Amino acid sequence: MSSDISVQEYLDVLRFQRQLSPHTLDNYSLDLQELQKFAQGRSLDSLSYYDVRRFTSQMHAQGLSARSIARKLSSWRGYYRWLAQQIDLPANPVDGIKAPKKSKSLPKALGADDAVNLVAHHGSDAPSMAANRAMFELLYSSGLRVSELVALDLQDFGDGGRPSQGWVDLAQAEVHVTGKGNKQRIVPVGKPALDAIRDWLAVRGQLLKTDNHPLFLTERGTRMSVRLVQLRLKAHAQAMGVPSDVHPHVLRHSFATHVLQSSGDLRAVQEMLGHSSIAATQVYTALDFQHLAKVYDATHPRAKK
Image 1 (cartoon, rainbow, N blue to C red):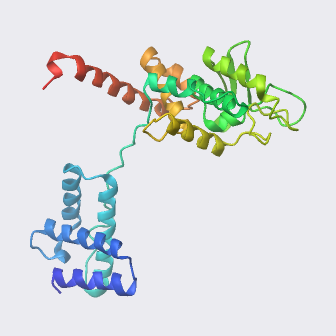
Image 2 (image 1 turned 45 degrees about the horizontal axis):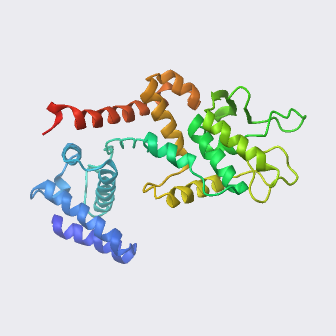
Image 3 (image 1 turned 90 degrees about the horizontal axis):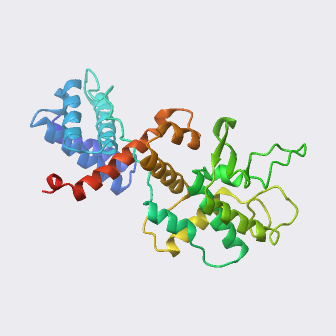
């Protein structure tokens, strides 16, 4: 059985027996054509584990993404499994070969001016708008997770019910937070966020119904939800013409990036973010280096081509 015949028969099996979609079939066909191209005229059943590993290295060197390489290996592996049922195949040459690790995408962060303008702007004096501004300011001011934000109470009630998951101490300019793993931390709160929270508290009573505990309330008087914060922030960013998809974690990333750029204190950023490991915080050093690299490219005479 020649390689061309075996590949076409396998594609027919996928088309008529497994009834894969035309798009998926096209991907399988292209992947197997690439395997034949790598083989350079050799029969596909003669390829070894080392051949396929070399092909994988070549694709990686050519800049193909880890996701695309993984898909090709999956296509090839499936073909050889089928081929082993048709002929005496010693082993599947793709078994044991893994795609390169996917590079971790860097978190998105807004520029400092963009972040400040985004959280400071509010459309009206309605209670819901005051809540929005207070929430957005606090997310950026203290780098909170959105789940930590909505769990905040008006104060540490200590009334024998559910223990408070966090609260803002306006007098001390700090927020008490219960994060992942029930770990508690205290993070400073900046003056703009404190002012925004005070403005919100001045109108919060207009939305208050029965539960006095939540710091942030919906228009129905219930505790603010994670999803609603996400929707409100996205709508707010779109209304301001911010081109990127802005969600609460973008403000957390922006907080970490801007503090690190200004201070260079990775340990302090780790503590304020509530990361249990410094490795989780080190991703922001890459963002900081990107910022420095842009400044260098734009200003240094020897950087210009």
